[in-house]
Amino acid sequence: MDIEKTKRYYDRLSDEDICDCVYCRNYVKEIRSTYQKLAAVLDDWGVDIQKPFETIPIGPAEGIMYYAGAQYVIMGPSDDFKDTLIDDVHISVTNSHPMTDIDEDHFVIEISPICLKWNETKKDT
Ligand SMILES: [Zn+2]
Image (tube, rainbow, N blue to C red):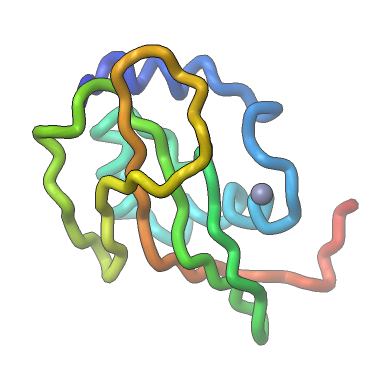
């Protein structure tokens, strides 16, 4: 992976580039504080955990929102990337993802599964 290029990619991503659905917004709001160790590892790779390429929501139940996983773009080749487990979350390279529309060498990782707080009563649009 190319950490500097990955950092630049995430620096360029603005909030408008992130999916605006209620599940993604909940993800962005809760992920960093809930999975601090995971966020720190992704930071080391240049990945901003609050800028997912894709989330895979399952659904909310009793104040918890379940995600089968979330996907992140990493720049550079994937051949030095090792699958890993952090706080019961698997991190692995995935080939099953939407088109990224990125011309440069890159790959997509998936972190799974993810459970976050869900506050149904707080429906800010
Ligand atoms: Zn979404």
